[in-house]
View (cartoon, rainbow, N blue to C red):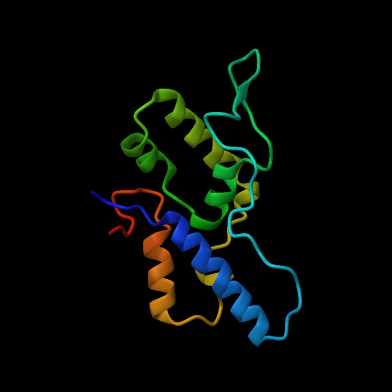
Length: 132
């Protein structure tokens, strides 16, 4: 049996960000890596034209703003339900003006080893994500 460690990666990211802020004397509040509040399949709604209507707080959009996944490829291979694939592609188009950060820019100053751990834990495709 494989254990997925996505959540572990999120926690490590937030701890590393806190340590980096402390080292820099930054007293700002903690940063949540993927601060969203809605998640498919619970949240999506469609209007009369069958277009998705989502909040700017959609969890998947928040994740895409950081991880920049390859929507078309991952959507086809990962999601087995057509509505999930369509929703994934739609969210990829909603990332604000191509505004994307990435794990490296959010964790400036961490070692290569820490970055590799985060990157391995936070792969969108579970088949490529670290597990044990």
